[in-house]
Image (tube, rainbow, N blue to C red):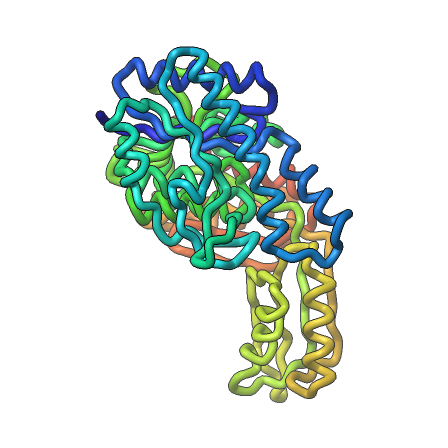
Amino acid sequence: MPILVMKFGGTSVATLDRIRRAAKRVGREVANGYDVVVIVSAMSGETNKLVGYVGETSPLYDAREYDAVVSSGENVTAGLMALTLQEMDVPARSWQGWQVPVQTTDAHASARIEAIPPENILAKFGEGMKVAVVAGFQGISPEGRITTLGRGGSDTTAVAFAAAFEAERCDIYTDVDGVYTTDPRITSKARKLDKIAFEEMLELASLGAKVLQTRSVELAMRYKVRLRVLSSFEDNDDSAGTLVCGEEEIVESNVVAGVAFSRDEAKMTLTEVADRPGIAAAIFGPLSEAGVNVDMIVQNISEKGLTDMTFSLPIDQVQRAEKALSEAKAADDIDYVELLTDTDVCKVSIVGIGMRSHAGVAAKMFSTLRDEGINIKVITTSEIKVSVLMDRKYLELAVQALHDAFGLDQVA
């Protein structure tokens, strides 16, 4: 039988009624001739509750026990989904990560999947089981301990299973009905995309789009897993949602596929830094060791042997960055006159594989922002994206103006 992977997020299984609704979708795919691997998240709000329990019990908790606690939410959902399917006369069985087994690294709370041997589940399919309901977000370390995969881990689990089982497709059911050209809450002209290339989706996910987790898209692109993003609250046909696929499956697309944004950005500048070989390593090494995720980096032209170094980072990592840099200065690893921090900025990006073959896209973006009176603080580019940092108060205006300028409400 062909295999289909179906993943249901927390809002899709938030209540018993929603679990029944999801189970009916699974039953339809079984009736269509598929053996189905269902990946489930914890019921909406459950993981946050469990994390809260851990924090209250032990502020300096053992990460191994943290994983043991927070992984239990998915186990509950998997069992309830399997029971619901059995009540529908669909042969189903729940599987925890260690039973599959989902083999991971031993980095508790942020483990990475290393292998998913399919033999155990395939043997049960051969014996008549039609649905394997697998607890997402979890696996087992080389030491035999339960591990969790970090934020968005159930998406990653689903794509990894689709790759391991050579599934025909991986359907991700969520609370939106697909991938849009931008957030519909920002502009009513946002349009749902029928298809989007892996590379575009990866850029959009990394730049602030919340539909899919970045690691899951990376896996899908590497193993050519066709993803479909669907709403769990609507009746879907075969053409519903958005298909994330290889570039070769997209016949024609707009030059720009979408506008992404991130509100929670900050900008830091080190002034009058000695311009010498190794200075960048001296600055960004301590930041990396402190777990600071640096994004945009700009170094000014050197004057009299001194330069300014500017970079962006998530706003919730500012204090960590300030501490790391002040310690590096105190240790004489780096020297600077002043550390300037701006926590009132945002990042807006345009993404599209069509940018490879079209000149003038960046110029059009910059002129559009100029016409709206928006000043650009920092710019970074890649082959298929342009990102700019600007004052946060201009975010909505910038997104709407760029969406209109590139005609994203129109089909190519």
